[in-house]
Amino acid sequence: MGLARRALRLVTGHPLSALLPEHRLRFDADALATWGTDRTSSFGVAPGCIAFPESVSEVQAIVRAARAHGLGIVPSGGRTGLSGGAVAGHGEVVLSLDRMNHILGFNPTDRLVTCQAGVITQNLQEYAQARGLCYPVEFASAGSSHIGGNIATNAGGIKVIRYGMTRDWVAGLSVVAGTGALMHLNGGLVKNNTGYDFRHLFIGSEGTLGVIVEAQMRLTTAPAEQSVLVMGVRTLADVLSALARLRAAVDLSAFEFFSELCLRKVIAHKAVQRPLSEAAPFYALVEFDQSAQAQVFEAFEALCAQGLALDGVLSQSRAQARSLWYLREAISESLAPEHPYKNDVSVCIEDVPEFLDDVSELVNSAYPHFEVCWYGHIGDGNLHLNILKPADLSDAQFYEQCHAISPALFELVQARNGSVSAEHGVGLLKRDFLRYSRSEEEIEAMRGVKAVFDPDGIMNPGKLL
Ligand code: 2HG
Ligand code: ZN
View 1 (cartoon, rainbow, N blue to C red):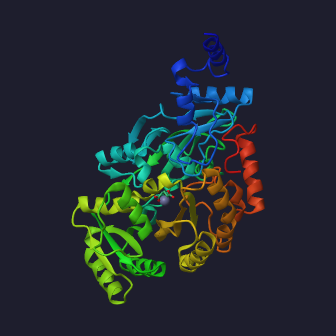
View 2 (cartoon, protein in one colour; view 1 turned 180 degrees about the vertical axis):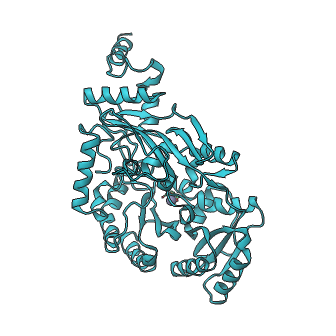
View 3 (cartoon, helix red, strand yellow; view 1 turned 30 degrees about the vertical axis):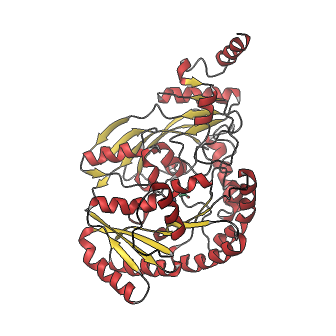
């Protein structure tokens, strides 16, 4: 009884309790554990409370109150992030966009959808499809990630080779900056040369400048029917020869690769069939317009004749295309039980062959006792190298060992002007390594930009910078 009264006092005494009804400001252990984190497992989780605003003005009120009381705010979307960008570890207010999940309008002339930040990616995709159009940014977590989170991390995914990143589809944003000010950025315009485009500063800012509350997303023409080819290849170099050959023959919608170890993990977790009768060291997954099947087949036969492809399977229906895609899309989830240390690096496509040689050498010497899963969007120069945790190491020991090896990998990235985080963002996981991709001068300028939008440093403190 005494305890209950004390908890009630704590709750009613909280600076936000006057702003939201009780059920939309949660302090219970379940809520703190659920909304205090993302898909990472290496960081301490200890938020102060979880706030669920339902309107832009409530977001503004929360930010202003947090500012007045010196509370940190962690904006939270679908919590599918892989870099700890939405982890609250120091008593912050987690500002969840879960209840701001409405599509607000559609402008067919400009092909623009206005949505609240908490709209789930798949809902936007289905909304577009129902209008004969397409929202083309696609990834495995589309069923739970939010549009606002995608924008805050500039999410990429599996169709970047054809459609680009989330940034390319954001026509306007409404944001509440760390000052509490509401700003409408670009408003859906195609042409607008009136000085700095703050929209692009907020895209990929990982919640460190403010909260994205609404977005105008551009749609495009629905794609033609697609076909998928999965082929087995002997070496990483052969994956890249296949990419060059196929790219010269047709416009690709996707070019992904994964290793036999990745496939084995997916088969073990998802009870799916091997795509080819014989195992191959690596697999390339290629998607293209069905109308280009003849050209792709010709290129594939040439690759086989040169010994660059071992075998292949071509989808004969949408269902088959989906099940081939599943082999690639289920990798991340199938590795999750082994608490992988994640790398998400990129270099220019031209530099990929040499880069992969150097990474192979490093992996063999640095991780001889760990299982290493190679996969990713190699057609974009983006490699996901996941190091799997052996059962006899604790999370902390494993994280420390991998973190200590990371500089060697990032030196290879830096030598090629590459990126230490191609699509997952910096968050907590890559913060110590930002300098491998950004100069001191750039990082100083980033701090200056943050100080303008978030002068008290309340927005997602400790992330990115
Ligand atoms: C993917 O490409 C995602 O499957 C996740 O970006 C990658 O879990 C990963 O490392
Ligand atoms: Zn990816």
